[in-house]
Length: 151
Ligand code: DQA
Image 1: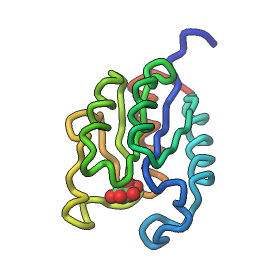
Image 2 (image 1 turned 60 degrees about the horizontal axis):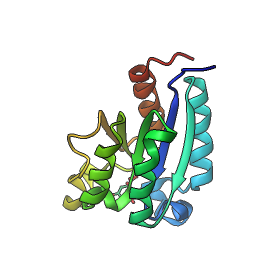
Image 3 (image 1 turned 180 degrees about the vertical axis):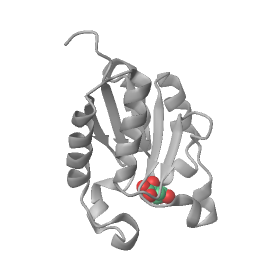
């Protein structure tokens, strides 16, 4: 199909490459590849096309966002700990001009105080946290509605 705006960049930040090694009581014990497979299935159910990216380099994350508007129509961002302090990534996300949803596997509001702050505040259509992988399904539904994509 042409002229369909249905591409969603799903970006994971620092430490997501070792998701399966992180505290399973907080992050569920699944590997990033398994999480991405679930997200991919949910995206396709919604008529969306996911594009995945993960890096442990803040600069690479910014550089990917610089290219994002050429690659995608919307963004799901889980920047991990960068969420709480990287103004550089917030500026780069704003620069995309794309609709974005922030997702966290864990409930960042119910953990350490420093996790309550998000640099994406005011830049994203929604912040979904504490719902585990299902949070990505909700983010995809929200973006499908925004992009007016139907299954
Ligand atoms: C996280 C929450 C962050 O506070 C933490 O630094 C992460 C993962 C989450 O998905 O719950 O790396 O973004």
